[in-house]
Length: 142
Image (cartoon, rainbow, N blue to C red):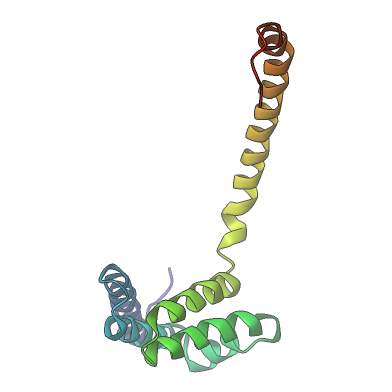
């Protein structure tokens, strides 16, 4: 069992409140004050959970530079009261940083490919069976 320190417990609470304020800020049509408060709480809570050194190391790794740039740039734009553009940049940066997309995209694209195969087969069957009927009745096809 992992021992959780008091600082980490405080950090979990700060991250939870930060995510709550971010969600509430988005639900209230991108309220810039709530979004800024949520961003500050989230980043502070992350620092409390994993420590200052690990947080700075996480954001400033060479291969995560682009994600960090977009994420922290979005945070700074939200703090400068440009919430919509800031949240878009934050979202793109968090996808690059935390690699959320590849976890579900592979299975989704495989399933989509299977559905496309079915659609192509159905369209071939339609052409084979129903196209002669349509041509014999002199009706335009698409």
